[in-house]
Length: 443
Image (cartoon, rainbow, N blue to C red; front, side):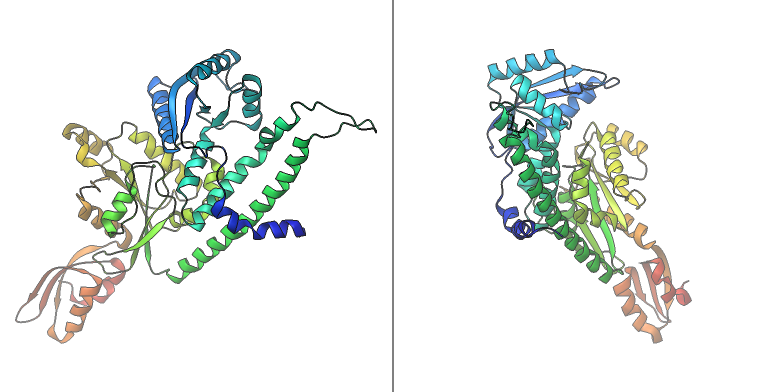
């Protein structure tokens, strides 16, 4: 059982979640150097593309990039990630350029971040912290705020020594009368903060579990409803596609992680059967594992889908890499066995020769332009075929069963309807599960 203070603190969680600011990156006018460690086998193009993405992340977080630096190493330095000479040079260049922070293109261990700060006077943050800052700024609903806050706290918990160590820098290691070492203010504050953070984590997890239970109840209530989920790398055009298919008016921005909450709308297909389409948070390479875990409530939409629309920016040079990254995350959350359609978006930007090359590489993919709403009918037809296993059938229905004709207008897509002397002739697209209704009238 939590003690009284923890219970009282837990009651404040909802209020704090609305008002608390992310302390590390709260300023929107900061400057930074970017640093990347090049491992064996990494190509120059891979390095530059990864740094381009980090710069885009920094820009989305409100940070201006002043310089980019790389070091080749077989493995990171255990205590400082980079080598001594590299960090000394970076520190000097940052001083000259008046750069505020150094952003490292991987997740640092707590000891590495502390040592870089302490030994070189560099304020350092890592890729994960930048992503968390963006998520914090883009979280609008209570569900998203809870999930982001949980990820922030789990990231901060092992790093409290970095935040409070400055209290003890000038105090030295004093001795008590009994001869044992006394703890400084920072050590005492770390213990207090750890208890408070663990209390927050417990309270937020309970709230998220309630959201998950609520969504599970909703899912069971609509088990007869088919579910389609749009997934893809961040900024692939998922929300634009969602709007094009549903007229939902979801916010579309040319920014990373513009969508954090899953949004669902009813989708009208030819069969007339109920279908729900959901837009989800974008994936990204090296997405922190604890961030994925924190977003379990949102990712339930993906896990429970009957079909995934794996949306890709077909004009991006790293399209193949992004496809692999998304599939890796899908495997991580147990959604890799769900049927998917590869949706090659922004096809209007492709040259004809390159489009033929991509089509040969991905023969089952659908080329579309969500922005121009091109080829969406083909996408919907393929989605319908995969979910309902539809087929085109020609029927001959006697006039004494015109009630069935009326019903087929609800269940199927009518291509031809001809009232002849002897019967009603129909050509329809119908799902496999409704085929039994018309089996006696198939020509």
